[in-house]
Length: 487
Image (cartoon, rainbow, N blue to C red; front, top):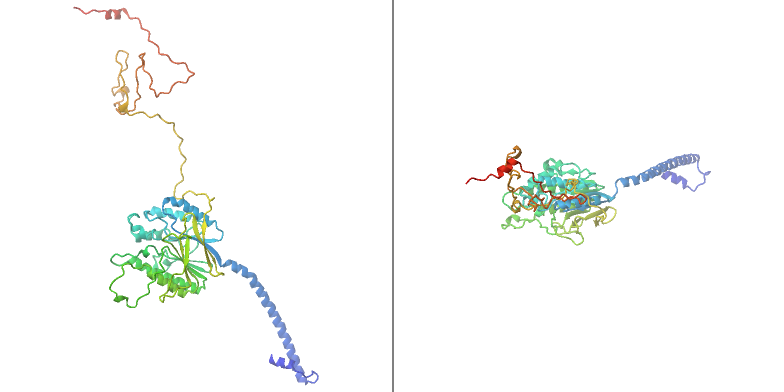
């Protein structure tokens, strides 16, 4: 184009230019016009494509909306009487329109409840009533504390395997509208760890870890602490895998759920010559490896990292937000935030977290209450009550047989025969403890009814006792009666 600009900027008149110059200039102008038309057509095409993309932009933004909400509850069921209020709580949470899912962050049973299979089945039935997808994270009362006497004296590892086969067996979440998830058991090396999960909502990666309290189930007894050591390796791998997964997907944030409080304020730096120490620390921090894995995750994924767990002690406002974790150099990890939850009323409140990735900070925490007008549903684990049977009329109570008056037996020609155990051909004797109504003779010589017998209606005439008419004696009987004894 430089030759065209030079020819155009020439100050000589057209007639004064040579013929070959005029021909070259004419050809250049023609080429310029052709280029201008092509550029105009290309501009129109690009504008059309831009409009088409702009029209599709709202659809893509709606498909991957950066705004969503989720609820977190914990320790709601500590006895069978808490099952119906928990169903009511889950029902109130599911009525929120913008809610994406619910996380039950540990302890579906109380510390004093026995870890029976039937109890796990009942609590799973309660969690399945949630209309919103529900993700369950096991806690210390669910398996680690089952070895205590008040919890039944079970083997904690066996109870954890029972949870893996029941509540944690499906490749989806719990609830009536489940969501797909990824379990660590899909990795062949960590086949047993079905409780460690990962799911995706929008561009946020969520992780559930099996970290029970107290002290991450670290045992001080002799021998190899096998369950603790193997689970520490599995949790560290799952956190590293989640950090790399979020980094490659360019995720907006990473949210981690666990039940126990890892005490992030207490961070022990690794010692270079720890083997020179002969005295061992009596209280070993069972969360030490976990906190180092969290520091590594925050360094690998530079976006916001949210750690959510239940509190061991009550919190006045229902939750606490801080950044207590530091790295090996003592520098605060700025992109990791801890949310500690402890609602004042565990059966009528839940923690709701609203996420908006456009804002900074992207998460907002609030305490929500169950509406008072919401009725209390029946417990799903209790069979419906049967209709009560019609009430029977009251029967007057009688005193014991030992306090009854003795029955007088009449003697004489007109007295009925006494019961000898063989009346009407039926063997047996009358037991002494049989309830017999007291009977007493009247003044007229007739037997009166017992005082408990019902009286006749007043409209009927009374029945008067009749005196038997003496029959005239025959001469034979008179003669027999008048026989005198001899001297």
